[in-house]
Length: 93
Image (cartoon, rainbow, N blue to C red; front, side, top):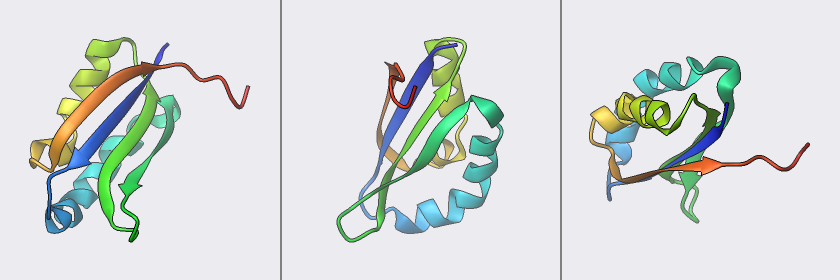
């Protein structure tokens, strides 16, 4: 299965919404199981979250888009932007 990178940037001043939605978001990510390569927040220079990056295996781009659309962060309106890009793992082998 191919990998896809899901890259999301939060709306400005959305830290409270991110915190309030985190408990629903984490099980959504964990449900990927072994298909998940990595996931975590994108950080500003001061260490505060400014977005999300997730790389996982999906059947195809449509499956990655459907997964991202069902993310509680997305459903809550946290993101100002979202991109979903096919990705090829080279290292580590």
